[in-house]
Length: 383
Image: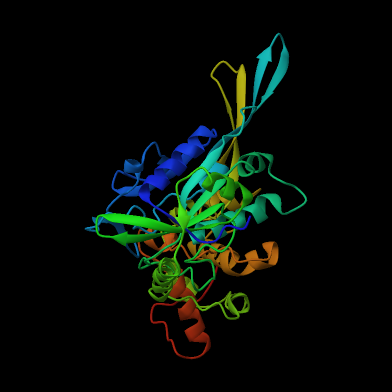
């Protein structure tokens, strides 16, 4: 694999999409539906969110027209690629009663062969985190593993930052560094655009050979790098220096009560997060009592039932649940898996109904420690 930077026109992108379909991939990528950019099957280039961008603030998301022909001129929507490899609902087995005996049926469907189109750098890091969670220990999740092994990834670098993005602070973007088969940077020129790309795997190199392209000129490559660098400079900041230790030292901090007074415990942040992996297991039977199913579904540490043990919930208050989520994401996740559980995509800020901003909360707790912040709303921290 020795291919250098290459240039791909829109016609080449269409050829790439068609080549993936020919190889049996289900091509998934961004598309507009119900006022948001979501991930779904792509059949043609016109399915992409051409000419759209997203405006995001804390608790606010809306689509706007860009006024040009950008195909990937947005940041991220409520969907993450997690939903395809770690499905929201998964049937684990089914049992039938027949002639007085129980017959068990495992979930035997073949894993789909996915091609992800338009994966952002922060989302590549999220996939790496999920790989560590589901595949990195002594016990691997066979359902995740079967899906993950067949994924082909076409990354698209960010050339603009959303108001809630901070991937540069956690070193997960905005440029894709690893974990992709092909990586593209879109350069927009009015109603037209082209892509400057890199090859990240042998599979990517083989696919590129089937697509019309040419070597990128130095000026084209430098322009692509400059656009990505501009996006990095536009972002908000999360101070990660000593972050784990600072959070561990702040478990009884009065700021937790301030945020708990706002938090609705709705779990939106965990549902849109590309790395959260909490699940619960449910059993169901039909009315006749002849068929039973066990399913696994996404859950959230913000629900009282999630930490329920015999006698009651371990984390009974909103304060305790928010503290558990944030300290796990930014601190104990590092002890557990060796890397941060946050990739800086900003989804939790955008999709929080009351606009709670984890970068703001971390900064506020740090300010109290150094005597620069005096919370007026804070009560005593308690569970």
